[in-house]
Image (spheres, rainbow, N blue to C red):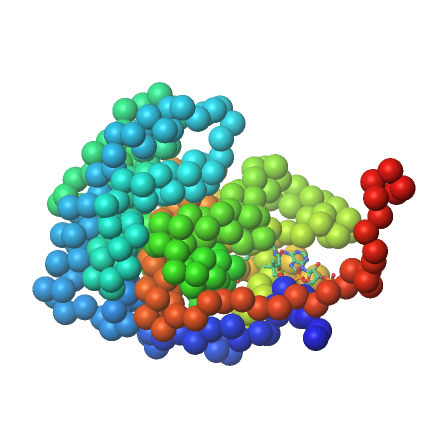
Amino acid sequence: MTSTKGLEGIVAAETKISSIIDDTLTYVGYDIDDLAVNASFEEVIYLLWHTRLPKADELAELKQQLADNMAIPASIVDLFKSMPLNTVHPMAALRTAVSMLGTFDDEADVMEPEANYRKAVRLQAKIATVVTTFARVRKGLEPIAPKAELGYAANFLYMLKGEEPAAIEIEAFDKALVLHADHELNASTFTARVCVATLSDVYSGVTAAIGALKGPLHGGANEQVMKMLSEIGSVDNVESYIQDKLDHKVKIMGFGHRVYRKGDPRAPHLRAMSEKLTKLTGKPELYDMSVKIHDMIVTQKGLPANVDFFSASVYDSLGIEHDLFTPVFAVSRTSGWVAHILEQYANNRLIRPRAEYVGPGMQTYIAIEER
Ligand SMILES: CC(=O)SCCNC(=O)CCNC(=O)[C@H](O)C(C)(C)COP(=O)(O)OP(=O)(O)OC[C@H]1O[C@@H](n2cnc3c(N)ncnc32)[C@H](O)[C@@H]1OP(=O)(O)O
Ligand SMILES: O=C([O-])CC(=O)C(=O)O
């Protein structure tokens, strides 16, 4: 029995939800380039959960269900207030809050497909409120209730900032949500599938997935990209900063990917958004720095940017605090996690691989006083 480090190249599940073939990403067979330009996030949620695009009335129904379920229990606010708010990372707060949401759901352990779908809707609706509520509570601000008439992207920005976002902000944020919604068997989605394959519940699966997304080799990279841009500070500093990191073999966040070789198809969309939005917000240097970093890494390491690289300057332009970047990713990816959880339940088998044992051979127990 031999192992493959990081399970590289191992096909561990069948899925109808998304695919990456020859660097092309599709959701249910629709090219991400097509969806990024044409689909709303709510349409993508429906697509991932039903493996088909919604008709107008079906989309309207899903939007209504999401709007109806956005409120969160007051205890979640109390939970946040009880946390060490000066130090807690929003991803840790989110992980804990999603777990707690499960305790309030009467159907948490009801495993019928209809009940699991209802939980999917509730969780997708509430996760936007959870993240924005945390963002406000930690600053001593009152949470803002969602407005039923706003779409998902608009509601998120509204609940975060307390004012209705401009059309260009809604459009950009909605596109970012579309681009982050699903990605085949990435680490957090695999985590969710492993968790629920024991027939554990939807909340456990998403809580586990949030934990996996948090790491800087996965979703946590977008916050680290912004940290790097802030440290660099100006285009003139890019070369020496990046060269120093490369000379010391430090990984540059937002580059490289386990699956993509030529490039991540989501990155050009985010790059275009970054160029446009950083100009509008009067911070074009963020984009210019990003491009210079990008060119250096591509030239010297041959590594293309992944989804996390240009999303950092996009989220900054939308006025989102830097440590909320990964929670925003989680808000979008919940749609994909839940789709995979429902797919796993529909054709379940326990996921239990083997490990290659590389420890010592058979030993005989030695009494403690003789060691
Ligand atoms: C949403 C997402 O999860 S997208 C990914 C987000 N993560 C990041 O941006 C973090 C930075 N990137 C990385 O750490 C990696 O590229 C990963 C985790 C994405 C993929 O990892 P793996 O497929 O395991 O590749 P691995 O880490 O083994 O790298 C292979 C080689 O490329 C190098 N490399 C990979 N990524 C980078 C990088 N970002 N900067 C510099 N060198 C890199 C490695 O040092 C290694 O070099 P070596 O063979 O000389 O030791
Ligand atoms: O697929 C991966 O390994 C990581 C990734 O890009 C994602 O989850 O969006």
